[in-house]
Each structure stands twice: as C-alpha cells, then as structure tokens.
Length: 119
Length: 315
Image (cartoon, rainbow over all chains, first blue to last red; front, side, top):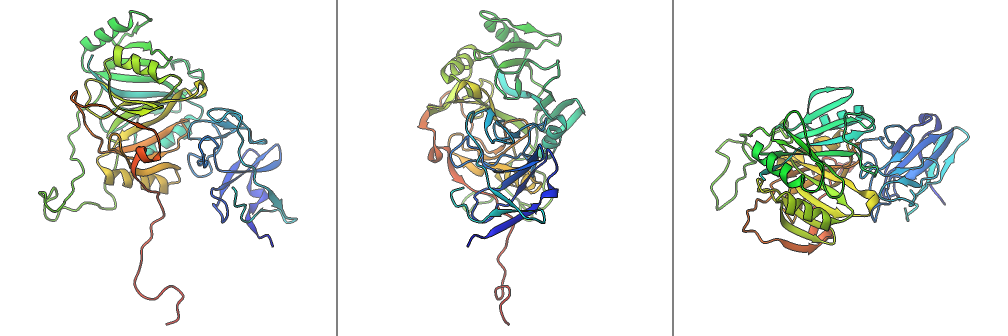
C-alpha cells in the first residue's frame, strides 16, 4: 500500500510562487512546489551541481531568482526552467532537477507519494 | 607592494531588496544604503557593496552569470598604489581615479581596484578559553557565553574564485602583485596571502569550466569559534539556508560555516585562522572531504535530555 503525504492545498500556491515542504520521510530534501502558467510543478530541493545534491533556497521558500523567471540555486547562481527543471545557466548547465510526482485530490489537496527512496 | 587584503567586494544583483535584507541579517551594517543599494560593512569597515545589475555605475559583468563585479583591495600607502600602477601598466590599461585609487583587470578578466585601505584598526578581545595546564584566559566569575552575546563579522577575510585556469591566476597574483602561496589543493588551486597580511589566505582559486568563472564564496572573520556558531545558529533560525558546516578546515585551521545567498555565491563565517610568515613552506594535498576539514557538524534544532520517565509513560 502506498501512503501519501498531504503537503498543502492547491490554492496555497499562487501563480509565479514557489514554496518548500518537508523534508518528509523518504525524501532526503524538501519538495519545492511552484505554479507556472497555471500548472503546478514539484521539484526536489536538490541542485545537481554537486554529487548528492545541495539545497537551493537562500532563505525559507526563497527559491526563485530576482526576476521570478526561474528557479535559482543560491549556491552558485544556477538557473532552472520552472516547467522542465532544466538548468539553463550556471554550473550544472544541461542537467535537470528531479521532478516529484504530485497527486491532486478532488478537494484541491496536494499529495506526494511516500518514500521515493531513490530521491 | 603592501596589499593588505580585500576592502570591499562589489556585486551587481538581481534583487537589491532581498540582498539588503540578507546582508543585514548576516550581521553587516548598512551605511547610507538606499533602494539602489550601497555598502554593508563589518566592524573594521570592510564589506560588501551591492547595486542592481543594470546600474551603469557598476564595473562590467563577467561573461558568466556570476554577480561579482569588482574586488577592491586595500593597500598601506600611496607608494603602493604607484608601484601597482607602474607594474600593471606594462601590459594593460590602468585607470587612475580622482580619489587616487586605480582600476585594472587581472589576466582572467576579473575587475580589480586598489585603494589606500579603509580598514579601521580593531581593538577587541579574541574568544577566551580556559584549559587545564594553561593560565586561565577568563578571570573568576567571567562567563564564556550568554544569550545576547555579540557575534558580528569583524573583518572581510577572503574571497574564493572559480577560475578557468588557476595557473594563469596564480602567476598574475604572485608575480605581478606579490602574493605568496601558503598551501595548495592539487587540481583545484592555491591559497594565497598578500605581502602585508599574515592570514593563511585572503584569496583561493578553484579551477572550474569557463562558464562558472566568478566568486564561489567570501568570508568574514568572527571573534572565535563560539561567535561563529552563535552567529550561524541565529542566522539559520531566521530561515537562512546553511550550505556546509559548522566545521573546521585543515588548511588554514579556520572554523567555517557557509550559507547560500541571493548574491549567487556562498557567505562564510570564519574564525581562528592560522597566521604565516615567509618562512612557511607550502603544503599540498588533493582536494577532498578528508583534506578539507578536520571536523564537520550539522546544525539541528535545540534539544535537551531531561530526567524522569519517558514522555507518555505510565506513572
């Protein structure tokens, strides 16, 4: 049986916003949920620049660059496409963030599956 | 060439308000800062200058996404500026500004400025410790820690640069500006100190691909390891993201704690760094986890064991 963790409600994430949740059991880092062009996307808070990944915010929930156009790793300034997770500028050019699958309930609650151990 | 060390590091940022908040929370004092940016200084006057990246008063950006725009070095006297101008003018353009400072580029394209140092001499005690077998450093009834104890950055300590060619960089700073190699991480690069500073390093290079060129981190000296951990704990509790530490490096012996920042590089609190003179013979070691640190810790929320039965146990 797969357990799921409730992270937040869809309405908690405004257009152009990003928020971090966790870390929850089974994930080694927080999960970043953002909304871009109306769609929700979730990424592991783990910059692929270094082996093992490093946390990207400079402060709680501060995951985006100044212009709010990209996810930014505030270690070395790498920029990632908010919708594809691809690094478009910086030290891990061409690498990708790890996408986390979300489940949205009929009531608008956002769940993530428990224990994706490889993440 | 009596170069003392970095007076200021100048950044062109994409969010002036966020960067201002960050620098203030880190423990630096804004001096005449407006919504356009300005100087955030440590206790001796050294610090970080920020402007929006589109501000035309900034030196030009690096070809990478790094936000570092200029390293401003302090020298002892006008004669040192004249000597640097004479040396660098041999093969590049050196601009003398109205205030007597000079600007030039290094061999990798980093913008440099040299000025008579603005560093104010500090007169403050180092962290004092008591140990059996040695005279007590704290008098009877003098306590070591208290909740509100001051823990503010004292001096801009060093800058670490990602460089595409550490040999070219080392040659420039040693042969043209008189820096000295104190230790070397094989495959990464050397630690350097300028002639007029006995700190283990004010500059360190890490060799990387060209598209990463820029500032990897900068550091401020604290009054001791306790101040470092107190400052870092307060910073982390406000929600700022720890990157590495606290711990203690091997080369330089300095305690460290690194944090992410909105300036696109890490900010480090450091404390208790080794001092060297020209008798020192540089050591060399491969860069890696074992050579990088003697100890490494990770912060956790405060916790304490308590007496009595476990919570929820039946009486």
